[in-house]
Length: 297
Image: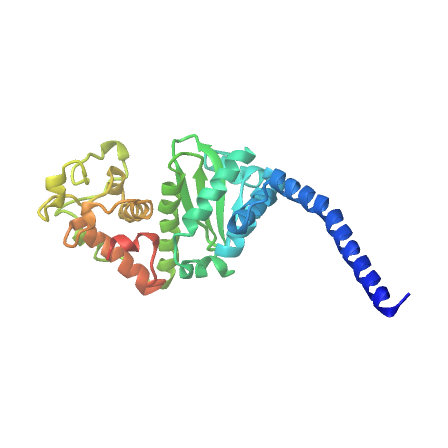
């Protein structure tokens, strides 16, 4: 065979080989396309979201609860206890510990989101070994309390919260008490001028059955609420129990607020109390923004 014929033969053989390879590849490509279409693999961010969803589904509810507890400890320095770990404390407080793992899961998520509304400097107190802080989950209090905070002689802080639809608000109320406990360690007379912000001759009363609505903010009376001459000094009736409860109620209202209320306008009597609270926090803990700071600009 001549050299030219040999080259032509090789070239023809090569073309046939390529055509054969292509024909063999086509069914594979078609099959791959059909498979990918059938499983509907998402793209970009959608794919990432799907993967996260699948990972979450792998966790049992018990494992997810333990992960949430670790995250609260790592991010905020706060320990969370429930069930048998709370039982001895709950008994002394006329409370029933929480054992329902699904309720615990929801409570933990609410608490994490609530804690995320605070500037990180607030948690310098809880991250320190000097002030171990615990959140104790209970099912309910027999005496109709929603929550309470305590400090013992070892400077341990405990916040007890029950499972109610007002859990977040109750938590912020008690969290403020803890903040005030901490500030009192640094300064003896935190709010020595507080009573000057109340009506003349006003006295707090711990007998809640005797507390009326006088001086309590009523947002429905819009015209009165917008006037600087109004007589609104308290955000709730319970604010009139003690000055500490007054401050905690104001703080709790601010931390769950969705829309700025009229009492936050400059010159309002309640706004004067708000400013005093946050000036004190700024002097003792942080001047960085809380969730509610946007309503105080």
